[in-house]
Image (cartoon, rainbow, N blue to C red; front, side, top):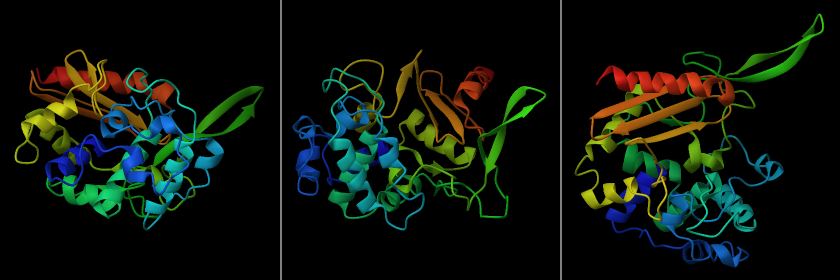
Amino acid sequence: MTATLVARAVEAGRVQWTDTVGGVLGAAIPEMRAEYRDVNFRHLLSHQSGLPANIGLGQMLGFPRESQDSRADRIAYARFGLQQAPGGAKEQHFEYSNTGYVIAGAMLEAKLGAPWEALIQQHVFSPLAMSSVGQGAPGAPGAYDHPVGHALGPTTVTNGQATASLRPHPPGGPIVDNAAALGPAGRVHATLEDVLKYLAAHRDRSTPFLRRESWDALHTPPFGGPYAMGWAQREGMLWHNGSNTLWYAEVMFDRSRGIIAAAATNDGRVDAVGQPLGAALVGAAQAVV
């Protein structure tokens, strides 16, 4: 979704795919490592920037879960990331980097002068009539009007047998989603109906939402390999998955067959739910062939 927002901003003439981290954020983060100064949007969005996957856990825990305006937090988050040693050479090393997407969000904010949350609502969700979209955990605190995310709770021992139970984390609690600064990397909630609207736009290459060259840029790996900008190429389809440790979801679209599919669960145990949920996604796609 953040990559799609960048494509919209490129078409509007507000940014360029070749805008660099140093050129946009250099004044705010002068201490960034030299290896990252010429990293651009294409590198960040295809996970070929050399950035490690995440900042340190202790650093991450210092960011609030909720914020009215996360721009300053994103700069602080980007500062941590841009001082880390690269995990590999730019354009040669693929590493899925949440930090890279936070930095892309901070660059958009610096260029467009508004929070990423407002930008993606105005330029992506509203044009696609995705009316259910919000940030953070879905639902109102105490109302239980939406499913609630779950993670492993404390381990109990009964008759010598250790059992780890699932623990719910309802809205309003201390652990309900990623830190607000991580919005560009994964903090959006939406109904499956709206998720399918988003997938249909990519499948159909909807115009005038984006021009053909922008869809090509999003769907084609810019530096080789199987990963485009926000999408992994898998057996003729474009696919993505994600978890905030309380939820897990997978989505896909296949232009050649005209198929879109989405599957999600409010169980964040990726090791336990990844295989069955992936099978549900494939089953849904096969059911419409």
